[in-house]
Length: 371
View 1 (cartoon, rainbow, N blue to C red):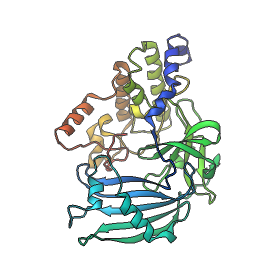
View 2 (tube, rainbow, N blue to C red):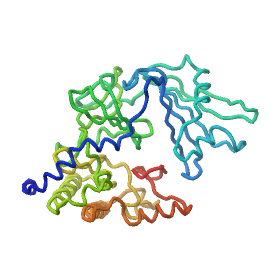
View 3 (tube, rainbow, N blue to C red):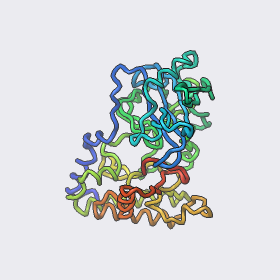
View 4 (cartoon, helix red, strand yellow):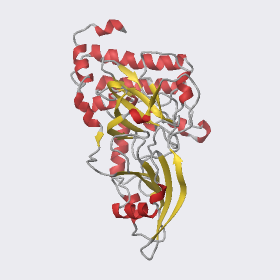
């Protein structure tokens, strides 16, 4: 592959890969002097979620991990009342959390429960008389997960400072504190754990974006992984920017070989990935493409045959299924398309009010977005 780097055309790819303008793809949080942050999640059908929650950070120092208390306010669709705050939050097309006034009222009921780097879960329900009931389901559970033994290079959670956050299946942060460089912190959570053992089974390679460090707190609990940051972002975002339209075939061939080399490496170590797609390919600072999120966790329907998602398949793709998805990535590179043809059809169907049948990484769990 080194031979492909010699053409001068590759300088164009390096320009794209090093562009800091791609940081606009990260959601900058405007949190000037705000004591808490609130975000929301839902479960069930996109058109009518059955349950959800509002996650609130209480206290702490903005941009610093482990200094705030995390409060999860859970709620279900209220069948007894059409108009109530939890139904409003569940039906909000933008995924907004509970009303700020209600959040404040809930927090004021339990001020003694809020401990830094700990989590409290409160169940919430509106009542017909205009009041609401709450029940503390879990109080002051330490954040993070149990740490596996192993020879990990660790970084303290408290040493990291974050400036930007991207909310996907995992919370991703741009952080500093581990040296001078900006890195990506991929946070592990109960509903989105990270398989640490998997990363110990693979030798070092240059075709994957591998974790550089494990992040732990002062209690030695696992909080996530650090990875190198590449401002150009995913191949999907690069294709969406239109920056590849004028790229010569020599560069596209380099990228195609890069992706194929990554898949070959995984397959040669008996790993069926099952989630090959352009959003899981990163354009790195050196102009090469490398794979991310390659730990097998499920598949995305647009990129894999429908048979993979049948009950008898148990969500387990094959080497051949990976090869088919690789072909779709190569097609995307060749024709500069950010969406597959049938993804466009699904989008049009959504506009006509039909059901959205796309799923996220984990087979069986419906999400608001494909990535």
